[in-house]
View 1: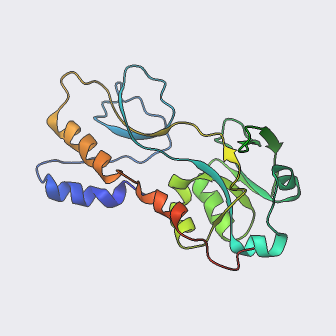
View 2 (view 1 turned 90 degrees about the vertical axis):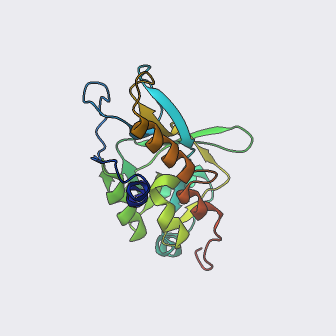
Length: 209
């Protein structure tokens, strides 16, 4: 979504480099599987890796304007119990959504709804079509927020997140110039603001409930 559009630009700037790109939700072993570099979301636990943080991300709750027009906008976390919520089984706290208000009060709500999946993009499409509310990251729904297909809800509450966006490499020792070049290049494309962040500073469309 955000890396692929940059690859042709990188190849134009570094024409002697050949890229074999693998896009997968699988947690690959960079060392054992001979990967030069990876872009990884979340928290890092493998101490063998050299990691460079290139961007932040944040979780949020969102919904389609059509859903909010039909069901109303929840004003408190407890109100989520009366709404259709889309569940991503990849979250560690599934099916609970955890959030904190500006006073530091924590709330944990076990949500339910008509659709759960291990594929977040399936849930994004369902949310856009008004099936239910969704917990997501700005990385995943940046485009939908930008064009108004989804709008944020419960914005006074902060959702527990897991890490950031990193470029990771197996080792700094003997690192190839092409690997360093790619890591530097991607880092610059995500700085000072990553492309998905623009969605959150765009004004929400009127009439969204």
